[in-house]
Amino acid sequence: MKKLSLVFLCLIIFLPVLSQEKPDRMQWFADARLGIFIHWGIYAVNGIDESWSFYNGYISHDDYMKQMDGFTGKNYDPEAWADLISESGARYAVITSKHHDGVALWPTKCTELHLSKDYLKPFLQALRKRNIKAGLYYSLLDWSHPDYPNFTRKEKRYEEDSTRWSRFVDFNFCQINELLDKYNPDLWWFDGDWEQSAEAWQAPLIRETILAYNPQAIMNSRLQGYGDYATPEQGIPIHKPTDTYWELCMTMNDSWGYQQNDKNYKTPNQVIRILAECISMGGNLLLDIGPRADGSIPEEQVEILKALGRWTGKHAEAIYGTRAGIPANYFYGPSALSADKKTLYLYLDGKPNGPIMLKGLKNKINRIWVVGNGTKLSYDIKMKQYWSSVPGIVYIDVPEDVLDEQLTVIAVLLDGEIDLHE
Image 1 (cartoon, rainbow, N blue to C red):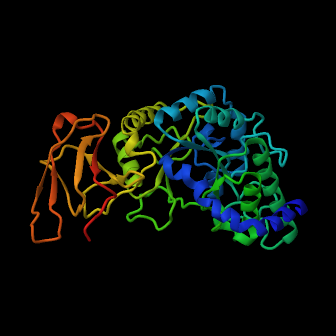
Image 2 (image 1 turned 90 degrees about the horizontal axis):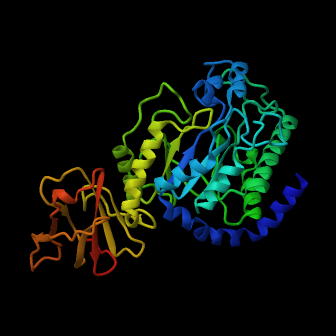
Image 3 (image 1 turned 60 degrees about the vertical axis):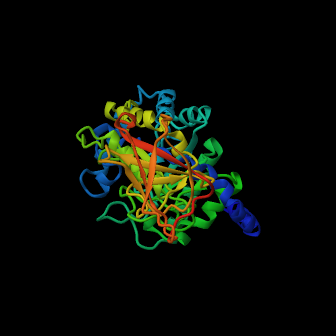
């Protein structure tokens, strides 16, 4: 810990410089809009809740750990995984290096609780070959570690023991430094921070240790306030989050890891519409998949990713590099703006019953077309009075034959940066 503390002291001096670099570090994340989350671990053997199944007493810890014997990974194909992720249109991917159960997916030297094979290295290499940013999920808490205070919901190892807690903090830094040295992820997705304070985790030191090794690395918010972006989970925000950068993490069905009995999958249309909602509010979607214990990806998940890829490929200009759209009162649906704010993208779900309506637009319209199709659309402006500064209502005709099978996107090219009447 002396070496790390020395690094921390040096970094305090340069903290203003690191803070100034944040916008540059975050640019790729702000432009990405879509990422893929991967929950893969021994919990896929029985198809049970990752870590929580023993923590909540649904299964004993000993029986939970017996799943290590059944985790074969015999059909694990990191190249195929990366191909599928690339086809989906995702610009980054995050895989669980270690969940709350403490089982590492790499041969860590910090503990004996790990799988015998390095499952992380070939996957991260495959991602990077395809210019996909590589992220690692890491659980700060470890319910299996003998020096961590909490074991299950009803059982604690200790209440106050500074010596044991210090050993656990050293263990955490041991693994974090291993992951830095071995994989140097572009993104760190921390979890489990709620059980301890930032001071206890030494969260500032974790952050600065990572940035000292890789000044371009970014971290999610689950570091007790020392991350770069917010991570709402499983529910679309009703209003645009106040955080500059944010990401909705969401399962395809109701489970993070593979559970053979969970068939409650979202349809491709539902996933695409959720993605559009995130884009409309200036955020990303981190969509989860849960491979089987043998490394194969369930067919339902493959189909969703392929359908998503068809849509993202067709509508790339209205996804990547866009910014949050206009308020809902101006257009009844999700929207987005190009980076220069001169093109407005309108996401149209289903078949409209007549022309679609755009209100409060003060700009002159240069052209309107269907994204991915190119068809120029006609429009009409009503209720524009010569004596009033209130803009007229723009009615845009959208013929049925240009509609996308999932979600149609209309581009409105403006004569300058968008200007809305308030």
